[in-house]
Amino acid sequence: MVVLRDKVVLVTGGSSGIGLAFARAGARVVLAARGAARGEAAAQSIRAAGAEARFVRADVSVAADVAALVTETVAVYGRLDSAFNNAADEEDSLGLTTEVSESQFDRAMAVNLKSVWMCMKHEIESMLAQDPPGGAIVNTSSVNGLGGVPGAGLYAAAKAGVLALTKSAAREYATRGIRVNALVAGAFRTPMLERVMERAGGATEEGRRAAEQRYVQPIPLGRIGRPEEAAEAAVWLCSDAASFVTGLSMIVDGGLTSAVR
Image (cartoon, rainbow, N blue to C red):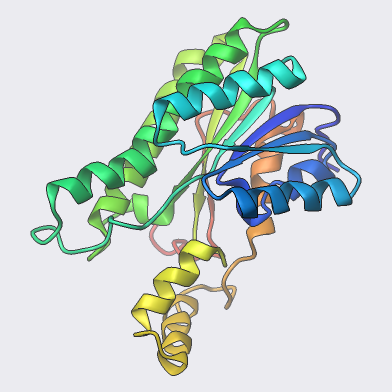
């Protein structure tokens, strides 16, 4: 059993319930997201399960919010042991290469790439300053970042950038007790994927079902993943069970990319 007993874990994009897996492993969890109502509800569900959790409203594409988030986490719990940088958004990142605007590009990179860099910057600084120093960071990338994605080039570019940032930081801080890995996610039943399938289906129920089937068809396991399945992989990467693992791109996609990797 993976154990994070009394470890302090920060989870961004934490309003969808993904922090529960860390709580079940014994961690004290700080959830961060833009939506206060859903974030508070997610924290309450963890507390109702008998674990310790708090919610901090933060937009991780805003530097001041990220700095305040890490500062508050350390102020409350005394240290930061692990971070799961999971926030992402497809909004403004879809469209053909010649059709997206400069403002769309800037927004897509701010939300999906710059945000990860800012989180790592403050998380690593905190981990280096604490006694004893060290920690583990997991950044969520995507199978879209492994190759070209027609109509989603901005999102793919941002997620490819997350992989490069992750591997670079892993090499920079390995000798200082900080491990950095990436979770390369396939299709998981998250609010973001639901929005994408809704748009692809033309806002009709029949179209929505057809869009979902297009996602499911190439997955060898024959289904869309559950969010907790992604969370469990991140929990393992943050735990001492993965103490010799850093710079890894862990692909969790139901076999989707197995034929080409």
